[in-house]
Length: 140
Image (cartoon, rainbow, N blue to C red; front, side):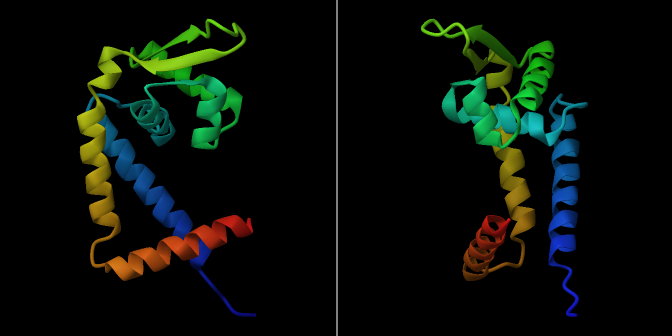
């Protein structure tokens, strides 16, 4: 049997990047929040406002998890929710002014994360890595 540590390495990379994100989020006043909270905020930068079910699909989390993430961000004053005017069963999430003010910080954190990730990696190697990881992901 051939021993392969690829899954182990992917897990370690995930752990280390999440630790980095948590540390950097703490520096901008988001201590106590997880990277998955950052996923919610980042998607709101992209879409401005989004339904809870669309957000759930966008961040690959189940609806109950998204509800908990959004509720914590609401408590911290970064997001707000409202019922859709056309369908009261749908909850729409958007950023507050405090949440919107985080965008330049998130952009800087993302830039720094990618700089770390691809340090010493050529453009060709990056493209190959992304292609291979996409294939491995689809295998599961």
